[in-house]
Length: 101
Image (cartoon, rainbow, N blue to C red; front, side, top):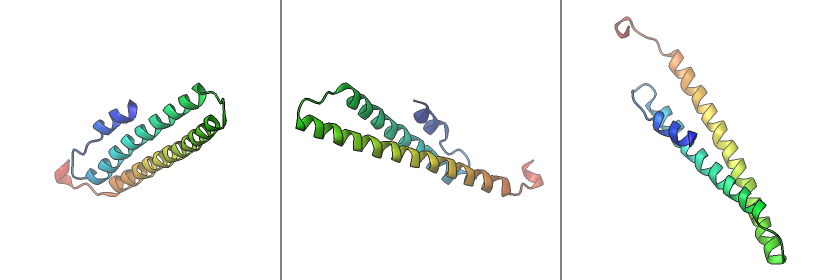
């Protein structure tokens, strides 16, 4: 819920940070989606029991997908952090003229 809210909060409003804000907003939506998938997979892993070989195979696939979803979520969160740092550095290096004050 927080990631989806941040997507709408970070919609570009000025020309200074339009490109970076757009990427951060998209990354927040991607992180919300991948985390939701990981949460559903963890629920599936915990809720199902292994009765035969087919159940075991399905649970192994679920565990592999869960690990992949968590790794993807971590990569997206690191990307949000890096993009935020780049946006902050580019914003602080921009000189402000006296007319803008």
